[in-house]
Amino acid sequence: MQKVVVIGAAVMDVLLKSNGLKVVKGHEVPGGVAMCEMIGGKLEAEESLVTSGGGGTNVAVGLHRLGEAVKMISRIGSDDLGEVMTKQLEREGVDLSMLQKGEGKTGISVVLVSPDGGRSIVTYRGESGLIDSREIDWEEMKKADWIQISSLGGEMEFLEDMVTFALTNGLKIGVNPGKKELEQKGRLLKLLPKFDLFNINRMEASLLLGVDYEDEKEMVKKMVDMGAKILSITDGKRGASVAANRRWLKMEAFSVKSVDDTGAGDAFVSGVVSGILQYRNPEDFLKMGLANGGNKVTKLGAKEGLLYKDEMEGWMKKKLKMTEEWV
Image (cartoon, rainbow, N blue to C red; front, side, top):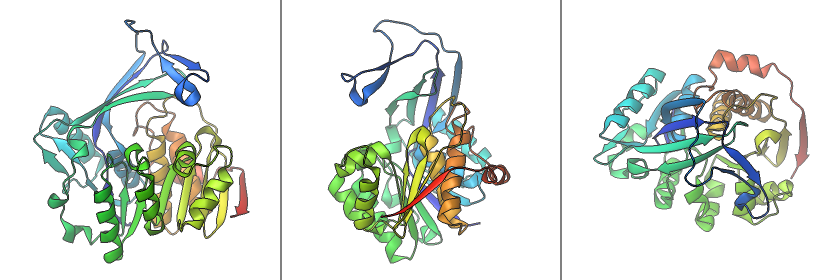
């Protein structure tokens, strides 16, 4: 069991899955595909769920279920939603001694889930985007083996300070950046050689590097040339890849029926980090990430499908196609 501090968003998720949500595709649609309902329309939802969410809580629970000792740094409000979230996370066994509480509102996300499991999210960050470095117990942080950071709402100075702290104190650090961090390309890429793990999805990598979406190998080569130590790239239903020591492994996804994609990336990261902490080889920790993400999408909500340690071992016995190249 390794000691991990997870830093990132904590919001309450309100999920609504409706067969009435339409998925539209076309060149005029940003990203080529969108979910829609006409203005003024009303829809019936067939399923609903209110649960804790945000990259910080998702990864913290994912790692704890896989056997790691997890403390979480995030920020919630002094309100009913914050109380509900705290109780849920305590039931999961996450150590909340470093959780911050502000006077504002706890963050909340409304997640609309389409029949095929795709989702669109509207988020109010509230206190979640206001993590205060002055409230962090830095002496306690030094006891960690690994620091895992998810979305910080664009607070790059905080990320830079955390990287410096990790390097100074001999701690490992993994980063799964959010949209606001990715928008600050120069500052993020400058930190890349200092991350022990950098996780990103294929579309994000294309935009971050200015490389054509189809040329995944060039994306990987560029980041490896920049000094990426362990690089993982998720690619939805097509699977994921890992590059370590210039060896690039691509693995197909597990064949599952998708119910809800919410939190799939966080589930993948949890599996990969746990595998690294267990000193597994790249083939295994890539497969652990895919297994955790694969099972997660079969359930509504970001945490319901996260695997426990004994369940993970069953998934690891399954075979997946893999390719290998040098970059």
